[in-house]
Amino acid sequence: MSGNEIKRAVALTYQVLKDYKPVSTAQGSGLAAEKIIREALESNVPVYKNPDLLKQLTKFDILNDIPEELYPAAEEILDFIFSMDALLGKDSQIKGTQNA
Image (cartoon, rainbow, N blue to C red):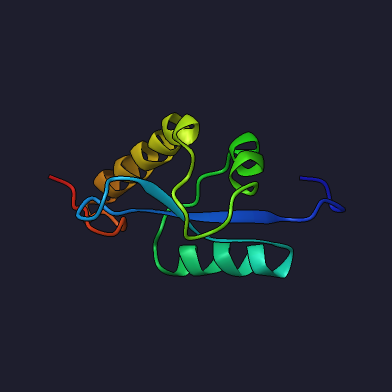
């Protein structure tokens, strides 16, 4: 990212005990994006960078299921988080799930 680009972020959650669908829980740009990223890092939630997916996810309102066509990309993110959690030997930070 060059110095003049605005930082953007989207937070996702996945609730196995509810409906198995990934949901966007927060999104923002500039200071809001920095806060989302900072809170994730402070909570030991892995941060996954994918500019193309970010562009797609910011087209949709928060607290709504993401469209099915984005499920494969969301699955890629969840796999990354599960892998990071397993590497660190901790339970998943995703609501309603735990590593086996």
